[in-house]
Structures are given as C-alpha cells and as structure tokens.
Image: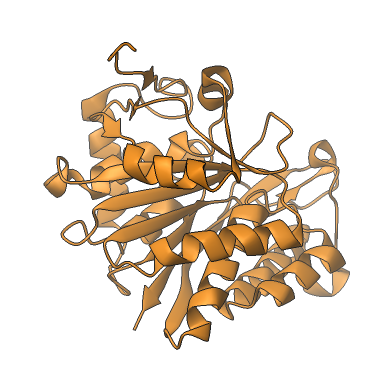
Length: 297
C-alpha cells in the first residue's frame, strides 16, 4: 500500500470564487465583518453554495456563529448535483485543498461511517465536479483559522434520499451532532425560480414575483425553524419548492428529532435571506439564499 496523500483540488477556485488566497481572505473578512454573532456557538448551520459574488455576504451570517475554540470536527453535508445517488457517499481524498490552506479529512470517522454499510465511495471526478461541498471549504478554513491545525473535516455527499433514508442517516449522524466538538454544515440554496429551472410557482396575492418567492421560501424557513422533519417533507410535497439541499436539511432535521427524544433542547434560527436578483416577469430567473444556525441549550 502506498502512503501517498490523495488530494482533491480546489476545482472551482478561479471561477466560483477567487483562486488568490490573499484576495479570498480579504473578501471573506469583509463579509464576516458585516455579520453579527448572535447565536453562538452553532452546532449546525445552513448556508448557500453558489458563487461567492452571489451568496458570500449571506453565508457570512451563518459562519459568524461558529466557535473555532470548541470545534474539532466539521461535517459538511452537500447535495449531489451531477450524479444520480440514492444513498450518501464519502470522498476518496485524504485532503481537500483551498486557496487558504489544506483541510484534512477525518479518516477515523470515515472508517466508522464506512463500516455501517450505508455509504458509497464517490470517484475523484464526481468529487471535483461537485460544488456543494467545495463552496463551504474556504469559509470553513476562514472561520477555523485560529485553530487550523486542530480540526478535521467529514465531507458527505447526500443523494436523493427517500424519507426513510433521511431518517436512517439522521439517526446515524445524531450521535455526532450530540457532541459539542462537532459542527454540521448543511449546504443548500433555496428557491430556483424561472423557466430555466422549470419552476414558476407564483402566488399573485404577494404582489411582484420576487415577493411571492420570498414568501414561499420564508414559509419553508419557518418550518425548518420548527425542527419537524415531517412538516418540512409535507411543505416540499405541497409546493415543490426547488430547495436543492432539501435532503441534507432532511437529514439534519431527523438527527435533531432523534436527539430531542432524549431531552436535548435545540433551537434553529435563520439570520439572513437574499435573492440573486428580483424577478418581476416570466422571463426572469433567480436563486434564493438563506443562512441560519442551530444551537443546543
């Protein structure tokens, strides 16, 4: 067996975000300086995964709640955009590169997850093509920089899970969520609206299209804040809102439900909401972003 370290390159650097470490660092610092740390320390956050020019400012509101002094492991759950996947998958890499510094995958946790038989191994091609996990790496590196040699990451690519699978993975990951030294990052954008997304839901009682989109998203965000996986599933069935990280969110909600059974008290609050543009007519399109954090009492 070779001891060669397998690295996943920062494949979206230079397009979705800056490939220059100093420029990226300055941008992240700028966005974080505009956000308040109101509900630290977060045990989990929901944050978007679009290009940083679109959602960097929004994501900062979630990352500002991270406490690097207690966090030793960062789980990153991102949806699969390019490959059909009905389960969850683990990375073939040892290290994830970022323009700031390299992040080390926790191979011990990976071995424990692998042993359950519930995970597939994604190819490096799949890993490097996918942006839903990568877009959280520079922010993770920035939020954790004061303890950069003291933490590892656990990237998990989440497939199009059935309700029962969301429950199964939620149960499995709940023991990790119970540990205050773990942070969960749930990667999701909100409504993808427009003909190019084949989604044009419109409630004219809300006025302009972008207001209808905001109303729909905030209804979903309110349901997530209730931390009830069944209500979130029903909301998605009813409105078909194109929340691309709905399965990672579903896994988190099921993990929380599992821990609440044992009396653990938790609260989730959204802190910011944004849209890539304001849709006013049927030719327009937009993607929505939301940032929030879960705290354990």
